[in-house]
Length: 502
Image (tube, rainbow, N blue to C red):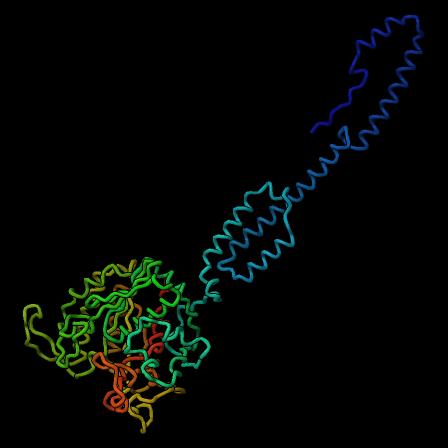
């Protein structure tokens, strides 16, 4: 910037000066020279004084420069703060309510003046990004939960111990889940102890993530989750409904049953949790969802299309098949088709029939499932507890009156699980082209002799009478599980896989 020059009489009016000299030609020349000399000295001193005070011509200009310097410094500080804000946004994957409160308090203690806000639109942009982050973690704020920590991928979730934890378990209350059927509501059906509800599975080398219903619903938004299989998968399906419905307001959820398919709808998330009845996965004479108590069970190991068409366009498929294989050592294979009225069959060994069926299922999955769209799970065998001698209780009657799991045991409990079928299902799922999550619930469930419905359930659609409840040897159900209870743990595995994958 150039400094403005002061106008002197020489520069301002040279003509006037010439005119004066012409009018006074008689004056001595030395008087004129002397006057000019004195006037020059005076003006020189004034200019020196002015320049020494400030390079501008007036005091207000000096104040403006000072304000500009202060503004420049403030602007520098503001840019520095913006840089810090950008760093905060980049580093914050999630921000707790406490951390945000501390940040707001810091901003209140160090307010930014209007002048320093003026030069930057970047600060406003960063504040908007922070607001977007806050919206993304509203799920955690509303549930008052901590940031969810996922287990390492190489952690074996199924190797661990049962820990009594009445603080965090059960994950929901029986009387708060209206969709539970009478088959599994043990407390409502007269069971006196509730200890079975408070056991939490603790993997040895990591932790299962804390269950967050809203997070689960976000992962299921615009998606379908379907359980396919027998009554144990239905047991797990009911558990999952209770997981999901706990944060859904009344009137925004519904359950519709139509033949083999039952659909629980979560309206605000455009999501469904479904169950499809297919106890052998392939066609059988036990496929009627209501009238299937058939002793003479017959299957068609290579026929799956009739069921499979109902499994397409599903985002999460959860399969199981086991308990309906366990009433005979050999399986009956139909010659021909049920649709054509065939009744003739032949028998083969259970493991051979199981392998044939799972091979058919695996081929269907590999051909019809797009792994970019659909995630497939297979649930291993859910065990029975029929003989109390298996857990060294000679005075017990099946699973009746058992109130604690089998604890302090490092080897699997032998309760009659057909491990041959376990190996077959494990091997086949590993060899498939479509990735399948094999959820090994078998060993950890074998320890839970206390968690069955026992005599606190229904039989052929009717509640057991007091006389029947007094006869556990005949009427105790040591196949299915009370809810809340063990199937909730199976769903914790499923939940972990779903939120980890997405």
